[in-house]
Structure formats: structure tokens, C-alpha cells
Image: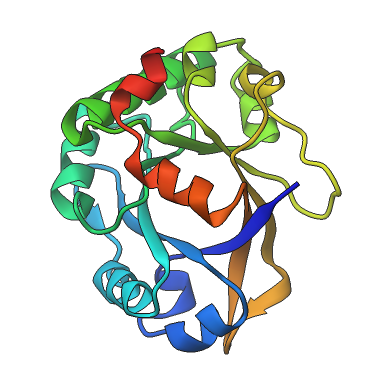
Length: 213
């Protein structure tokens, strides 16, 4: 199986990273935290995106959803900050419940996906983990399965997938969270993209119609 190494970063990695050194480790793509809730902007986002792009990486962004807040407004905030700031598709970081019931968390999560796709004209990747899916009742949610999965599962040879994606599989696997690998000078999260660099370019070019084929 072909895989490509990538990373994801936020303010936790500091505002200025040596992206040239990061690229030299074999990292080819980077997702940078852009936004959270209705108005939060990660203060390192612009520096991370610009630095990763200068180093020749495929660059993307992600939004951490707070289900207790209006998903439409969160999608609009994310779009305003991050649209056009890299070729990779938008990402829903789906790992918080806001102390809401599971079915409501699921409904609001998908409302964010639909709003984001309408704004960007691109399919939304879903970052989540099996433990989170279990915490909201382990729903089947086939409408989520039409989106590509970025799964988080550390310290294993094969990730356990949330229920909707068990037949489809993962597109990106966050296999290390501040663990065995390190970005130059800082801790970092590492990911595998399943495919070749040409497949990564195809991912950058997908339109929202890919979710409805």
C-alpha cells in the first residue's frame, strides 16, 4: 500500500516552525488548525500555512467543531478564515460533544459538513476516532460515510475505524500524536495519506459532487 507522510499543527507547536527541515524529514502535506467555535482563530494559522506552502507542502486547514454552538455560523467563520489558504479540502475536527446528547451531536456535525461543502464547493473530510463515535452511541450514519475519513488511532498497526467507515476504510490516519516521531524542535502529530502523490493531487481537485456520486 502506498502512503505519504504528513503532519498537522496548531498553536501548540508554536507560531514559527522550520518548515524546510520538516519537509526534509519526508513530510509532504500539512493540515493547520484554522478555527474553533464561532469566532476563535488559531493565532499560528497564517504563519503555519505560509511556511508550509513555502516549503512546497500540500497545505490544508481544519475547524474544531463545538456542537453547542450554531454549526452554520461555525462553517461561515471557518470559510472566511481558511478558504483559499491551501489546496487540500476543508476538514471537520469532530471529537467534542458540548455535553449534548449523541443524536444531537451527530445532527449538528453533519449540519456543519453540509454548510461547509456549500460554501467551499468541495467535499469535507471528517477527522474523528472510534472512541468518539462510541461516545455518541455508535451510529451507523451512512451520510457521513460518503465523506473521506481522517481517523485518529495511536500505537497500533491497523486503526480501528468508526462504524460508518468500516467498509470504506480510511483516507488519512493520524497514527502518532506527540509520540514516537517529532517535528524538528517540537512535538507534532503525524499522519499517513493512503495513496501516491498523484492521488493527493486528485484529493486537492475533488468537488462536492464527489460526495453524491
